[in-house]
Image (cartoon, rainbow, N blue to C red; front, side, top):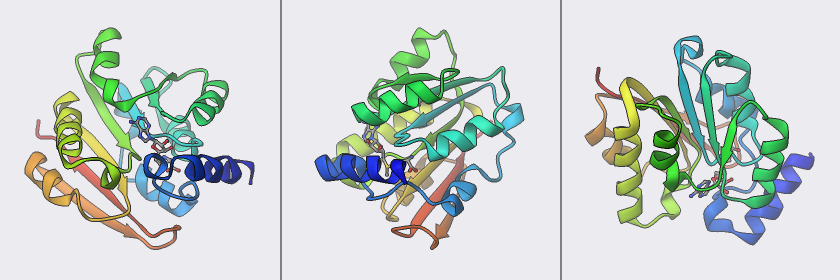
Length: 184
Ligand SMILES: C[S@@+](CC[C@H](N)C(=O)[O-])C[C@H]1O[C@@H](n2cnc3c(N)ncnc32)[C@H](O)[C@@H]1O
C-alpha cells in the first residue's frame, strides 16, 4: 500500500515521466519476467524501476554473480531502491545507460528490461533510445518492454529478429509486454 502511495505521489508531480498511476500488478510482473532463463544471464539492466516491483522479481531470479544495473529518475523512488537493493547499482537517467555500461567495463548487456513510458517521449528520443538499447545488447540478448500502447511495435520489429507481444488485461491500465531477441 505504501508503494502504491509513493508511486501515485510521483505520478501526480510528473505524470509524463512516470506514465502510470500505480505500480505494475503481480500478473504483469509475472509476464515481464517469464520465458527468460535468468540463471544464464551475466548482466541485466532495468530502466524505469519505479517502486521496484519488477526489480524484486528480477532480484529473486537472477544469478548472484550477474551484474544488475537499475535506473530510476524519480529521486524518492530511487532513494528507496538504493536502500532495498544494495546488491544492485542504482542510477538516475536511462539515457546514461551506455556511459554506465562502459564505465563498468562491460562489453554489452544480456538483458534490458524497460518500464520507460516511451509514448510520452519525443519521436526522436524514442527512436534514439530503442536503437541505443538494441545496440547495447550482446548477441542473443533480450529486450523486454512494458508499454501501455502498441506504438513502439513497428520500431521493435525493424530492430529485432524476434518480437513477441503479450496483452495483459489484469493491470491498471491494461498493458502490453514486448519480448524481443537480438540475433546471435
Ligand atoms: C510506467 S512506470 C514503471 C515503473 C515500474 N517498472 C513498474 O512496473 O511498476 C515508469 C518509470 O520510469 C521512470 N522514468 C521515466 N523516465 C526515466 C528516465 N529517463 N530514466 C530513468 N527512469 C525514468 C519513471 O519515474 C517511472 O518510475
